[in-house]
Image: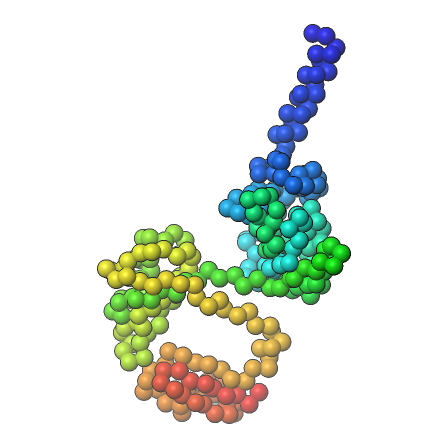
Length: 277
């Protein structure tokens, strides 16, 4: 083997090693070199699947649970030729990134928005406060706000005679990963449900007990700031018996802090309890 052959072989081996280091889905993409430098610097993984490119999730060395609700922010108004190599350094300033999901088009450009999940809620709040209207390019401002995550489905058309356990059992047969089923009793008959339930996870076109059911996303729960909650003086109480009186409600809630209830207004099976402070 000549010296020239040895040199050529070493170059080929080196080129092969570099190719093997390229994460799946990054080969040939715009800004490939900069993205490779990013993952080498941070140690995060990066893969592209289902129309999105995921950075992290979890981050290197992560051993804890998945971050709780309220840790994710939505990032909009992203220039279509801006990628993780520019976005990550910006959003790292607010806290430790658990994962970033950049929505991608078939042409290799981003779709103008992304989701960034932090490991702590306060980091997400800091990102909204400090990075909303951040100038990522001259004259191009990012829009950053809290992401409303929603994994609860509304299911209507349920036979009113079915119990929570029966609904949970039937739903679990056709849907994996059901965490809970929430059922409300009828105001007129507590032994029956109201014909609907809330259940976790994905939507399916299915029939339960021979009934065509209606499935849609439930309105997501609003994450109210603690400072706002401290000013609330009216308590909403639901699922009451029809015969329950306002006086009974006042007596029950008043025992926790005597003299704190101003008045009670009951309407059918729900009521509003007004506190003095």
